[in-house]
Amino acid sequence: MSLDAAATGTGSVVVSGKVRGGGGSVTVYRERPGSSREIAGSARLTADGSFSLVDRPQARPLLYRAVYVDTATGIPYAALLRQPIL
Image (tube, rainbow, N blue to C red):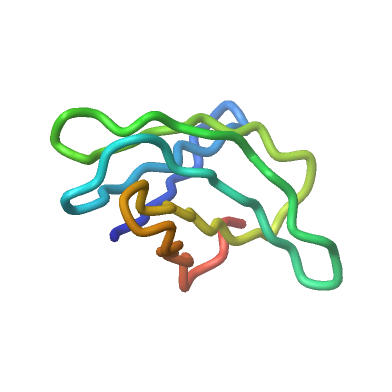
């Protein structure tokens, strides 16, 4: 599973990534130090396993986490950004 995020000039953040061999959807969370994790949204996987979501966070810095639950096994897989979005 891969995850990337890029801030735009309009204050929104484009979160994208890819799940290998998956189908269904990914839940994207935003995380800030000292705050509870919040759901930013859900994105459907395309035929090649990629996903994209536009988030409009109220505050920064923040990190994003994407969670995919394998529909066949019920096992959750996750990816977390390593660099905060400022």
